[in-house]
Figure 1: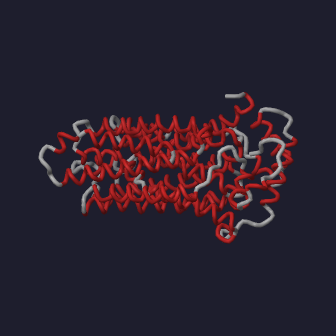
Figure 2: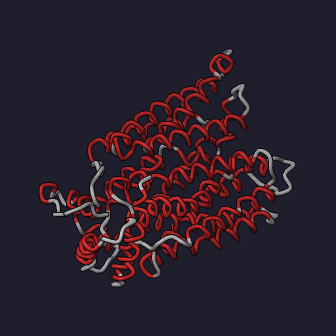
Length: 463
């Protein structure tokens, strides 16, 4: 880690620490939903109530995303991120003392709103403070933090009650707040507010040197040019470059969500129980999440060398194959072929882990990294809010589809459907998604405008 980039790493890691709570919330139903659905549960829960409890974070996220889209430009990227911590802290404490599934669902809705806010403001912050050479790595740490949270809740969920685990998880927002409090604000925000001295001071901290006059002048020119027009939601569709950015985002987001990742997070234990493997569902879940974390670390380490586009393609192709194989396994299992489960009980854990590895290689961070790079400063906050709303809407539809299709027909139907969606997404990614490796945010805008041969002059790499 070069000393000149120390605060870029520190700011990213302390900010991404807040996303651990998102992973905790999304993975919470894996260990605890089976307990709630148990007839002996002290909190009576039906299948329908359980499914709504599972998707409540996705339902709440659009509200948080839209609020954050306003606050991000009003009070700043850093302040908006910090405001989220006390809300998450109080939410975890509320879950600890909840006595009905309705209360738990409402609190998960609130935490979901904070997730929507986080996935709106944090990608903006990280993209704006990062050097182009390490931006891919830093933005992908958001995905790593989410996986750490999912693994964490699945591990402690095997041992601790809802009460105990909720109080343990309440420490995460406290750590995030205390560490992120000392990080600098994005220089882009200060320039937007014409607080140039504060912007220069922030840039000096982030770059680890005093001579930032040249970069500061270039940033001022970029931001002021992009800020000439007031941001409106319709600008996302009326401006050709923004419209192309929206189209690219829809491709990667829909492929991400309809790969079935959210249902796999919500119902991991139930899927392994249904698979009938000889490996216990609890151990399978831990293996599943651990391998995902390792794979994401590897992908994060190579993303700035290989580029995002090749990783997206490999990831989507692998997910399509894995999901289709899993769907075929569940179909043959439901057909009650003699000795089928005993002979092929290795397939569920093998291909679910393979799916997780391949998803983590590209699709895991596709929406975060792509959307943080595609939009100009004047519409970025609005774009991130709309993007997160679209993202969680797709996640909610995918999760409810999984539950309904599984209840009505069997688990093979949603897995086959998700596999086909990945195959369609693969074709669209190959055709329409560009590479952004090594490009500044300004150069990416020129690419979206179809003006690759007219890249802006720059004497050094600007964010």
